[in-house]
Amino acid sequence: MKLLVRNLARTTTEAQILSLFSEYGNVTECTLVLDKETGLSKGFAFVEIPDDKAATQALKALHHANIDDSKIRVKHAQN
Image (cartoon, rainbow, N blue to C red; front, side, top):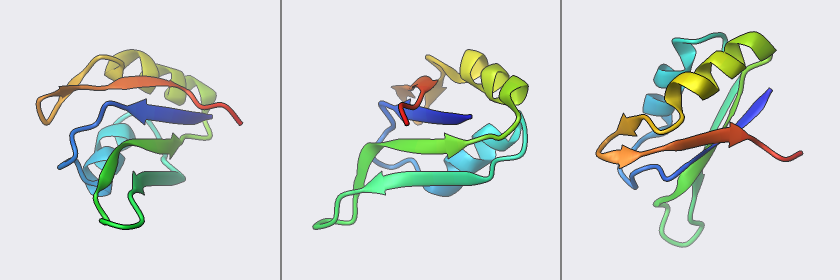
């Protein structure tokens, strides 16, 4: 299942996101979206967890979690 993680602090790294979601299951893809011109985070990422049950647990546990002083939002990504 592919998840969209929004409202990330600009300082949050891809490694932090991967570590956070890995607590709930095997993450096969983690992509922090960066601005092409500045190389800085755009404040959102995509996380792929193939096990739907683990992905749903991560979504429920991390939606509105406080990460780096930002309340993140997690939802199913549109394909």
